[in-house]
Image (cartoon, rainbow, N blue to C red; front, side, top):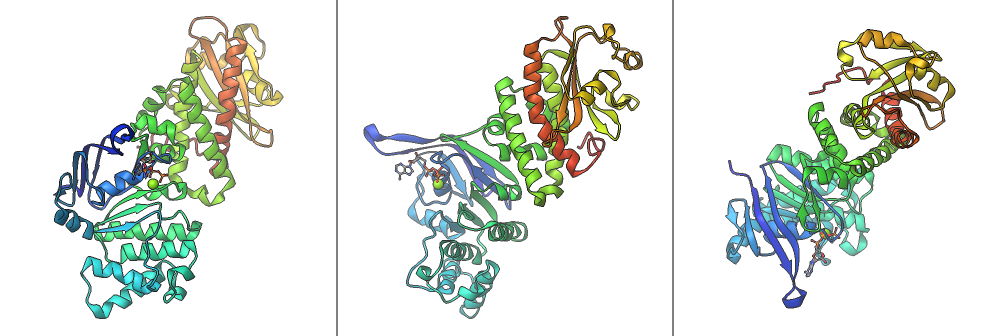
Length: 444
Ligand SMILES: Nc1ncnc2c1ncn2[C@@H]1O[C@H](COP(=O)(O)OP(=O)(O)OP(=O)(O)O)[C@@H](O)[C@H]1O
Ligand SMILES: [Mg+2]
């Protein structure tokens, strides 16, 4: 079966002459049947324009727009109309008819779709209004409804005809958290049960998880994976969470430059922070899995950025430090050091960063681990990681600068900066599920 939406090489301009301005650039999108695609992007990036082009509400200027089997570029009005009739629309502004009651407005959705018999029209419209929580407003006119209630009538009208495709522009913008969730859940079941294809523009981070795929528009360009990763933290979280193969995630992180990496960390930190604050999300398996994978990728990346041969991470468990992240940790026996012993243990106990030029000169250094791993440690930065209460709950460690020089204060500062971001993330993980760093390391 061909995909209901196949857009390629789509460019679009508004205005004429000197005022002519390009707002879409060579956009490519394919949406398979029954998929939910979310479009994100800053205000003015072209999201609504893309939606109206796909919805046959505006004619295409360049490129191909195939929707529900019709080529919309240069299409005749009849063909456009035919496509439009199979689509449910929900707009930023709801376009209800003021002279009609809520239930009459919803019935219009059925008449346009031209499917139901007249006896069932009213019932189906009622049911749909109930589904969006408006059972006690059925006979109100739009002017007697609040903004959010009007929006829900518009949603009911778009869904009641069980359209082949649903185009929604910020459908949950004026809804509270619970009604927003209900509305998207309804859309989702429509997609699953009727194979309705859904393209939805939203700024609402709380509903991104219903998407099969998220695309990001920035100044009229659909952004690449990595751009989007940096541009939109929530979207990134979702993508990372879906991208379960550790390998791939590491590749993404490896490809970032220092600035990109820092932004990514800040985004994740902000999200972790929010997660800590919102216990409702604590059961979010995808989020946790993402954090866990992120940790491996990030610790490795830190090693790279600071030109260290090794980067590792210990977590405090009881009165010991346990090595949780290190290269080849799978092949190693568990490394467990009592607090206060070794360099990492000393850093954990004192809460101070320890930087050492030559480990073997320092009496605190435990050469036993080198003997176990066959490695020769020279310089070390050992950095305590603290939770929001200031308690040390882990130690991050860099070993041996690749150029053979000892680590300097600059390395120490950068390491500290990055780790303080990672701290929140680690705390989130540990808080959610003690020992969660241990299990399914290679979630795939
Ligand atoms: N009818 C129009 N005539 C001229 N310019 C327009 C028209 N409609 C939109 N634009 C411009 O095209 C660009 C994209 O607009 P569009 O409405 O697609 O953005 P958007 O991503 O939906 O933004 P928002 O998140 O604010 O709804 C903007 O710069 C906008 O000013
Ligand atoms: Mg818009």
